[in-house]
Amino acid sequence: MGFALLGIAIWIGLLLFRGGFWLTDVRLAADQTELDHWPSVCAIVPARDEASVLSETLPSLLTQHYPGDFRVVLIDDRSEDGTADLARALAEEYGATQRLQVLSGSPLPAGWSGKLWAMEQGIQYAKQYQPDFWLLTDADICHDSENLRYLVVKAQTEHLDLVSLMVRLRCRSFWEHALIPAFVFFFMKLYPFKWVNDPSNPTAAAAGGCILVGREILERAGGIDAIRNTLIDDCTLAAAVKKQGGQLWLGLGETTRSLRSYPDLEEIWRMVARTAFCQLDYSPWLLAGTLFGMTLLYLTPPIAATWGALIGNTALMFAGLIGWGLMALAYLPTVLFYGRSPLWSLALPGIGALYTAMTVDSALRYWRGEGGAWKGRVYP
Image (cartoon, rainbow, N blue to C red; front, side):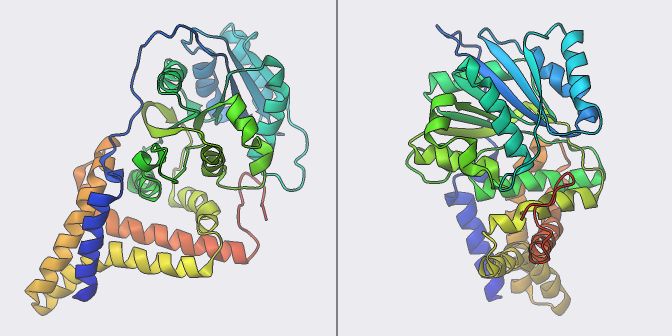
């Protein structure tokens, strides 16, 4: 009974005092403000074997409705599927050969992750353009035609140094329906967007699929080289910018979306296990605390409700139901944001159990020397 009541108290605290993380109300506005001066922007796109999505995503960048100077540098990270040739063909097809530059990435040096090394090469090349902002974006992101305009207007009108968008993730297969909205929910719980966006709050985060960052603030923060060996590079970059006094904004995107597919449980499991233990700073103590916390918050309520009903303990049953209801209430806005049935909110205990298992597996992979495996590479 005590654990059930403690879970209720914690859920009430999360709902009321953790930055309203669950409300999904921090979103990028479709702001059509006309600026007196449109800053120059250069997009940096690391790409490794992305031919399956590039035909849709790259044109969305090349055809942005942006009034200012805009260039795109795509770094082919030693792809084996014709990514570079397809990128050049798309630029020709869309009449954007002057806007796109395709670079062939050099071999990965020790101490770098593949994505960050590709980004570093792109930025070093594009420094000749001296852009006011870098748009750091993944090759699987399909941008709304006005996305860059909205990002720049947000940055300029609110004097922000870094604007990042948690793009709408793909949610089509059964396992995507079950687990992808929860991935966003847990991210928002870990990094409440309103706290990230508050200059007086030390919380810093960004979503790596879409980051607009000022060139000068990035240089002051040490550039990509300063975070070269990190796996959770987006949040590390945001922390470095905020440490320099930079102003951050992170919110949900409604029309810019990721095409990265996760057709089965194994793909999502691999994606989460790659960085979950890194998020815990590789600490067995934090892992133990996480297991206890996840069990208390997500598993105790349904267990208490079921056990209370079985043994006829009405108080225990109702305590479990109240905790389960608060949990479902917290998750409901995210479920609705992704256009899913409200009934999915009741499945959060089982979803939480799966994410807990992924976190444990992430630790096991790390201890076996398999942590950080991604796209054919394993990072120490």
